[in-house]
Image (cartoon, rainbow, N blue to C red; front, side, top):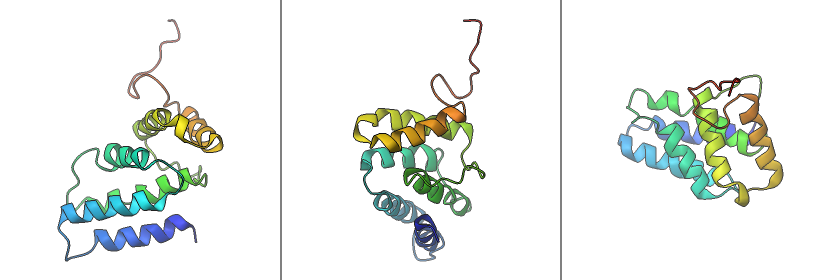
Length: 137
């Protein structure tokens, strides 16, 4: 069992807790995510959580679906992402590339290369994710 699977079980129990309000669930999921990845600036993880997990305000009925991305983010930062599943949309790869680039000087070179290689493989680096580059320029 991957470490991310154990974190997912914890996050899942938070998401399905009947005693917590939606805002409390989101706060606890965020806190669990931030604590789950060691050796990476907390601000980087907080930015990713904000831009990917909270891209639009989660609703009670969509929260369970949104938590699916957390273990994939954890696996990415532990250089253990299952490339066959390709869990992120192109827009999300673009966000990952932008946020990681902002913190490049604070990351281990191996991790930086691992993540940015995947961003490039998904053609999500630079520009705006919705635009195709014009090769005639």
